[in-house]
Length: 318
Ligand SMILES: [Zn+2]
Image 1 (cartoon, rainbow, N blue to C red):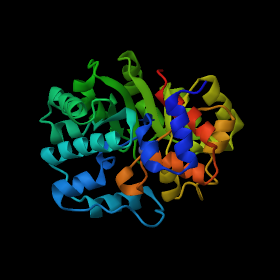
Image 2 (tube, rainbow, N blue to C red):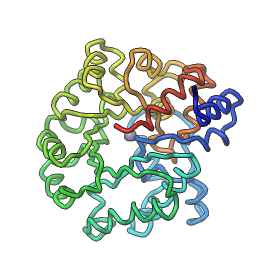
Image 3 (cartoon, helix red, strand yellow):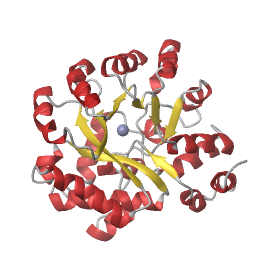
Image 4 (cartoon, rainbow, N blue to C red):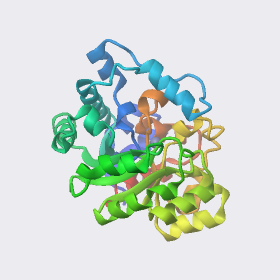
């Protein structure tokens, strides 16, 4: 027997009713909060509208260029950083997100939170309680891949031993340094009970995914879409029970995949991989989680029933 949310969700997909899709509980486990905020909320607060990209981007550099043109220095103050945290919870509430995994880059602790870990944690928790109390916050520690390991080890110090954090993630340019450089940090993160994630296999290959999973003992992979090229990688992902947090529109708009119809998420689902559907960067790619589900349905990648299976999978306790 399907529960009422499942019935409502499938009906809303079939009638392409985005408003109702938004009311059904979903997870967003791959969201960079700086670019995950609600466009209208930010416009109301700042008077400036951040416009999403129109054409497909060709590289991460083009994405960074978009960020500097559209956000520039406007948000590089403690108050404005906190506004972005609020905007992300406004967005999560509107999108029916019941589990939201977000967090600050370790670099931001000194830049925006007076190097005070309690202030950083309470900023996220307070905005969560005030704006979207029905959303479960999974607080993440974020690492930029290009940063030197000695720098990261230094700025990570205040984060260790803080039970408020749920996970750790690496993002940014996949080719900036070998993933093995992060081995010691991830070993320590594991000892701290954190769930281990990394962005890999978005620009890189299936071998890069295999290497990252093995060396860092990952629990989850952000993107990882290149695994479809390699049966061994798929087998390993399944055997190790690795969760893959996929962001279909972002993959298309960054030119990683030709179109939604061709997205490897279908093949990954058919292979039985533990999948979730997520937003990545709403302000750039203009696709909230509800919209992602609707797009995959409209493009006939999945049936409404299959999308409900994926939705429920994202909400399951792991
Ligand atoms: Zn991402």
